[in-house]
Each structure stands twice: as structure tokens, then as C-alpha cells.
Amino acid sequence: MPRSRAHEEFDRQVRVLAEKDYPGLSGLGADGFAALVKPLRDVAAGLADGGPWPEDDGGSPGRVPFVLVVTREVVPIEESMVRTALPRGRKPGFVDRSFEEGALPRFTATEETALPDPRAYLLAGVDRGEEFCGAVPADAMAAVRERGRTPLTIEEGIALVTLFPAALEKNKCFSLGGSRCGDRRVPALWISGRAPKLGWCWEGNPHTWLGMASAAARTAGEAG
Image 1 (cartoon, helix red, strand yellow):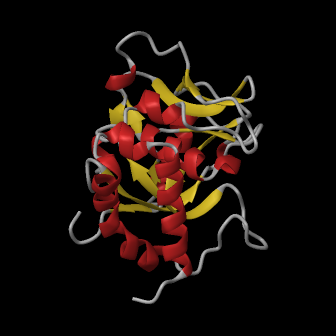
Image 2: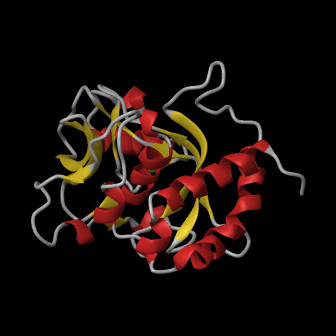
């Protein structure tokens, strides 16, 4: 297949993860990490060769055709989160202390989320969901599902901010309803101290600065 814009974008995303030491953190090394994500390259071209991408005229920083997601089975959340940053920001992202000891591992992908691969896959048609700013999170999640879309997981939110830092903006942050732990808490990414923060909010409490991120689909291709 000829090299396409989608191929170029996929390769850029892989380079960003490599620059942030995902191969080393995963224990796979450069060759092993490349082998893990390589099957997704041509899948990406089939998803979104035409864009629009955030940098296009009329593009939005809150909408992305696809994002390469590497899960906690490959790189721990604490390690991937600290490798996020705001555009031109120097302060690393962090996990909020509101996650009591042992809580974060319990926030896993919901059954309906149905990850196509436990380690790496593509998230298609990503939207940070700023239209839901000020909405009750439980209502926002219901609206997302009624549209045939799916709320993002913690790893997917981190991937979005890692690969598209401009997606996280003041007053346009987002909840991640695809990861839950069985109680009323909904994980979310917002800005604190000029850095991305992974925290949580109650499913019944609206915030004017928190939307509900969602995607059209997840895919790992025919082999996923």
C-alpha cells in the first residue's frame, strides 16, 4: 500500500511514544514494541486517511480521526500519565492523590467497552465531548451510548493527551466513563498546576469544565 497521510500520522504517533520511552517501560525494547504496534499501521489508513486532523483548516483540537492506544498491560498508568504534558508545558502530568492506595488498579474497562486487544489497538473517531461540559456525567454517558458511541477509558484518555496535547484545554477537559470501579466515581482528566491531572468526579455531580470523551469504535484489525 502506498504511504498515505494516515500512515504518516500513525508513524508520528509511534515516534512520540518511542520518544517517551514506551519501548523501555514496556520491557519489550525497540524491536518488540515496534512489532506490537506494526499490525495496526495499515488498519489506521483504512480508518481515517482523509482526516480532518486538528491542524487542518477547520479542524478541532477536540476531534481526532484515530489514536494509538497502549494499555496498562504494556505500560503502567502511573508511568504513562507522567509522560503527558500540556502544549509547550514543562510540568509532567500526574495521578491525583484522591485515588486512595490500591484504587487506581480497580478502575478498569467496563464490560460494554469490549477492548479489541488487551495490549494495543486503535481508537477511531475520537471526540473530547466538550458539548457535555456542565452536564451530569451519568446523563452524558447515557447520551454517548444512545448515539452508538463509547466513553473513553483511562488509557485512551491518556493516549489522547499524550499524542494530541492540545486536546486538553482550560474549561474543555473531559471525563473517562469507559473505566469504572463499581462505585459512583468517574475518572477524568483536567488541568491542575499547569499540568494534566488524572482524577475522578462523582457521576451525579456536573462540572462546567468537564465534558465526556467518547469514540466511534475500537479496532485491532483482523488479527485483533
